[in-house]
Length: 76
Image (cartoon, helix red, strand yellow):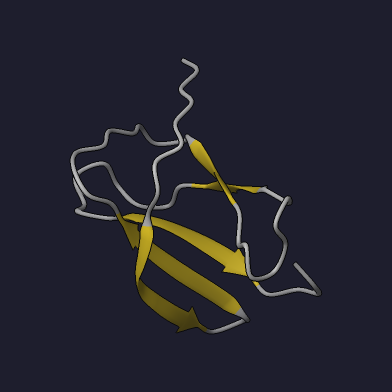
């Protein structure tokens, strides 16, 4: 299934886990639906205006947020 959306999310929580792993939890207004295994492309305008990077969703569909885990290695 191919889904494309330009929905804006805001960061609701950041958790720093051991081994340089950061969990970023995000929320949006309204409803959204996803299934395990899907990914999102993330852009951080403060770092790069044009670069998008794919991240696998790590939250379960029944949770009230979306989350991704990022391993901090090198530059963006």
